[in-house]
Image (tube, rainbow, N blue to C red; front, side, top):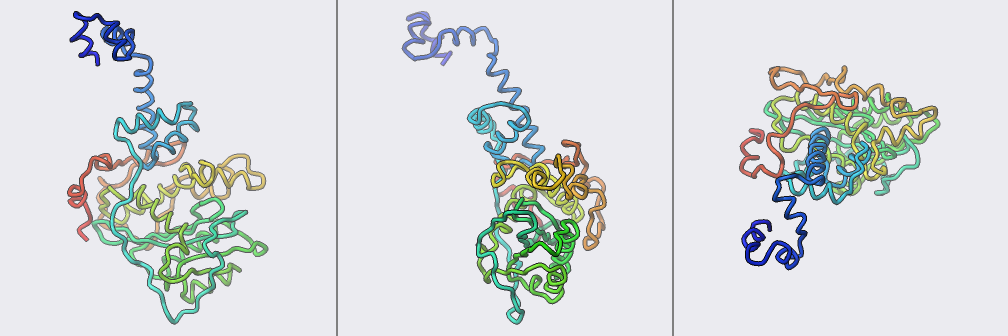
Length: 358
């Protein structure tokens, strides 16, 4: 626009040309001096805050969650401005890629609990309904499996485990962690919902549920909607952490997963919770708690990597150069690595070259 005004200013004058183009003549004069406007200076500052917040949150936030995170941090900025800056500079949230891999295999001879949830993934209190599942991961060392248990009330991950196999011990360890952490008590009715995988219908697993007075619930075979909340969590986990990163060893994936779970529980904004983290949401309903740090889960989740390693995944052949270093983010550990490139700048061919040899 300035070049067009420069081209015709000698013939018509600056003001007539600007008036015809419906632009500000004062803005033209200010731009000609080379001075930056207050808006440009503020945009540059805000862009730096957006980039840092994006990096700190696993490059997972789109403009809506980014705006929410900025407001919580004291940046009173319009949502449209955040959307404009992210679009102009190619900053976007995580997007899921890849093909599904079947892990659930039913045992037709096993007795299954009835479906006590019937796709109603709501709860009025903690420890009323848990959902669980497990998924696979790939790295250069081979395949790794991640099992988890989620409290539907606050979307908090209350139990998890990683292993190089998908035997029933994988899901049992995650369940035992949840039972030990939550201490729901015999006077509280707790429903445990899963798919019809043979791991969840095994004798050891069902006996553990019975011993702790937990009601089992299993959806129909081959219907992901019957365990939709767990499937949604798997999608978030793989989209925000696993995709577009090169994983060299199982130990590397394990450490990153533990850090991500701590971030998911303590810092990630959940739209279903009013855009606050699960620990913060649940702390309000915990008797005697005045802040999220007082929550019973905080002790085990505050420091993500302190003693939380799995006995099923030996750290063999791990180069120290590829171990995760930690940054201090709000007093907690956060990953210091970043994707190879911004997600939107990597082509499909590039992604195939860095994929696992499997």
